[in-house]
Image 1 (cartoon, helix red, strand yellow):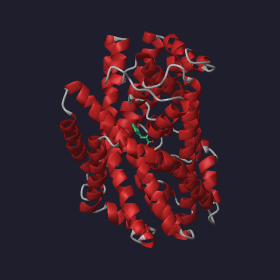
Image 2: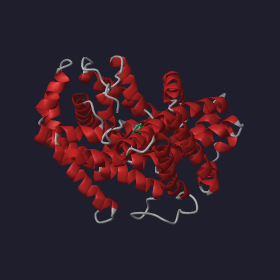
Image 3: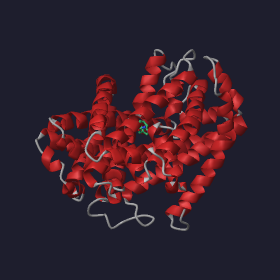
Image 4: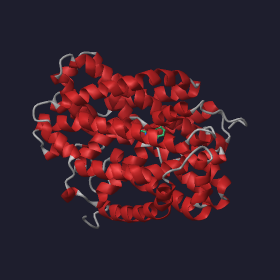
Amino acid sequence: MGDQRSSFTGKLGFVLAAAGSAVGLGNIWRFPYLAAQYGGGIFLLVYLVLALTFGYALMTAEIAIGRKTGLSAIGAFKALDKRFGFIGYIAALVPMIILPYYSVIGGWVSKYLYAFITGQATAAASDAYFGAFIGQAGEPLGWFLLFIGLTALVVLFGVEKGIEKVSKIMMPVLVVLALVIAIYSVFLPGAWEGVKYYVLPDFSKFSGTTVLAAMGQLFYSMSLAMGIMITYGSYMKKEVSLESSVKQIEIFDTGIAFMAGLMVIPAVFAFSGGDAAALGKGPSLMFVTLPKVFASMPGGAIIGAVFFLLVLFAALTSSISLMETVVSIFQDKLKWNRTVTCLVVLVGCILLGAPSSLGFGPWSGITFFGTMRFLDFFDFISNSVLMPIVAFLTCIFVGYILKPKTLIDEVESSGAFKRKGLFTVVIKYFAPICIVLILGFSILEAMGKITV
Ligand code: TRP
């Protein structure tokens, strides 16, 4: 890190940059399939409640820690209290686990863009297309290598500023296009049942895993519990209002996720008649459903191509900042030069990502906890195990060691902090107790020890 930290020019710059990190495949690809899998409306409700409590408090805490110390995660915890530097290290592990499998999905998006550009839109809409694609060894692996290679090139040559500029234009276009697709989806024949499934909570579907999945998704989607928001906070100017920035980032991120659900879930009902198996497709859901939507749309082949191009950009900006994070951790700690670090990180990512890709093909026989393939397993370890642990430790540290007052003062130094009561209660009691309960239950459940 240089002596002089550069900073975002103002509130808008900060909110856009943080939202740029937050909005990615998590919103467009991950949120809809989790909502479909975990009971629709009940998942949405739990997610919203958690976003307004956990998400809000944790994001405020992380940005405040970053702004107060002016450091990124590892340094920030250490600077606040020597004994708690280890939280920063655990947080640093998370992007290292996410980046490889994130890039496998990025590869899938690239493949679909290619398919739509080369006039295979109709073929892509058939049921067997996606399964046949990921079931191979070489092809998905090739797309994964292309995606991670592109990410590494950008990080190596430091041209992310250019990519960022392009994506600042493309992200709003993506939002508008997603809105159009969502409206179209909702009006497909038979889709209304899906809208009901998505927005009306069915309390009989509530379980410990619903909450854990929603919590993991919240952390993932908002780039929390992995040190990212601490880093962003360290670049934030002292006079920009922290509370209202957090509010805007949350609204932005959640709004896009909600819309992505509307794009995908009603369409699943329209094309499958509400078949539960179609809802439980997991990571492949978006790739199976959206091509069908495009196939039924006038001009769908072109709309599909544009859509996957925009998603690819959203995915690339996220993978670039993930890799940038990993590279800078190694660089800071080991003092390697940038080129060497980039290459080492690239090779590590390829080694860790290849099993996630092969896990849908030749390695599909290898599973964890019964049914999880490699990709689901890495996703589970990072989002459902490590991130809750980091979030728990952050709450304990802020609530009892550092004391909420320290961060409240930081927030208030730049404006009002209306919800400081809520912040304190969530950080000290609500969040830590819930995390322990949910984590305990869900790990037992994943191991098949209990059924909730
Ligand atoms: N939040 C991103 C998404 O929704 C994924 C993500 C997690 C991320 N951690 C990140 C992106 C760190 C950039 C940096 O897709």
